Length: 227
Image (cartoon, rainbow, N blue to C red; front, side):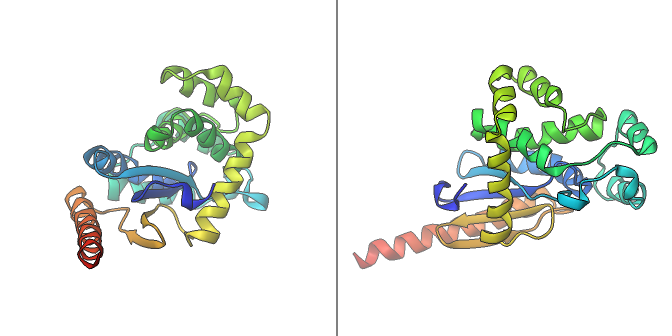
């Protein structure tokens, strides 16, 4: 994926489906997108938190339960009983490439619902304790949301979704400079402006977007005046 393919302007949400802080931001992100989708495009990129040697059993990250408690206190995010059982068992491998491929497969069929797909993936993991490496998890999300589950499974099986996921990682890191999750960006042409994320009230996010869109209008007006 190339950033030049994004509409102008676009809000880009860089997240990882296995990122607890992204789960804590998920409801706020959904509300932000719902309040502003009529005036700016939204998309989601996977960042790749648990890849390579970091794609390992959840037990190898003993800080997670304490981090989850903090996330729940600060954001109100709910970590489901099945997820907590999964965490206690400790054997499930968190592989962000698989999760990102799941997002890419869903996004390919309905790109305008990218924020929704990000939430659905995290709800499957943090709510239902499902592995995002299982194609059946992604297929169930597709079916429940009216997508062609067979086509989603095909994208996962033929490698095209993994290729899109790898492109997400490259775009998020190399082109956009995202190094933590969640990261929220406003893109317009060559301009990249970071928006606040976790812990930010919806009115604050809306006001920040108002300011950026206002600057855009002023810039366009100035250009027209010089013609």
